[in-house]
Image 1 (cartoon, helix red, strand yellow):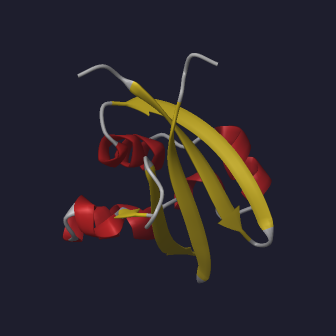
Image 2 (cartoon, one colour; image 1 turned 90 degrees about the vertical axis):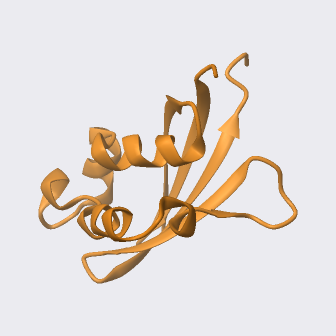
Length: 103
C-alpha cells in the first residue's frame, strides 16, 4: 500500500493549526502525528509545557483504547476523520483529511 498524505486541522483555544504527514492509513498517520508533532504548530499552540506535554493524554488514550475507537469517520464525508482529546484541561478537536498529494 502506498503512502498517502493526511492533513491535520487542529482546533484549540480559538485557533486553527494545520500540519501534514504521510502514512498508509489514517490510524498510522494519527500515531505518527502524536509521536512526532510539528514543532511550529506546537509553538503556535502556546502550551505551558511546550512539546514535552503535547498529546500525552492522547498517547495514553491510544495505548488504552483500540485506535479505531479514537479516530471516528465524519458522517457523510469521504476520507475524513475526527479525534477529540484534552490538552492542559482544554478540548482539542482534530480533523484528519486524506489529501491529494499531486496538487
